[in-house]
Image (cartoon, rainbow, N blue to C red; front, side, top):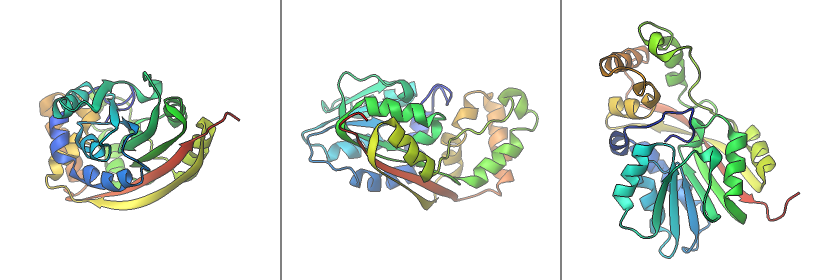
Length: 261
């Protein structure tokens, strides 16, 4: 899921919806941490194709969800999936410049914040969109996440013919740690902040499809189709044709301060 302009402009929403089973499965524990009565107005920050939004709606029989994502095709897919449900609405926005018609009671996010390099700006934006006393519950990639993928990208992205299209290598993700995240959340206007890391292993049914639809989505936006296939082959070979991927998830919970300090 793309949260800001410097991330991928768009994604293959259909493929992501089919292969993102690990993220969908992990989202259940994140949703369970939301303190919901069932009538709240909730922001799904980085809603993607709406798979997890659908699960979230099951917890809100008398509530509403607004899903926001930076990828037009993801938002379109989510609308197709849930457009008949009056409790759900979707908007294509940059999460660091979020504008909502009314503040939400809770912010939920799954597998999105690591795509956004400026977490200070992100958390201030989310805080502005949340009523005082409202909550934030999120999980994203954390410090040390998918280190094998990061190492392989640093090697292959500097090779020809890929470097001609990709340019100078830059880290795609912001895998922050809990310590700096807690400080950023407090500075943005939150209290009762708790952040921690959690190790996971993903065993996708279609490793190549999973690899292409998640890690390699930014490269697919700039590489010609035939070269993207070659690029994927080269990266998988550099990693030893993996069938699983090591993850480190950064969890966070926080409450929007009720009074300015």
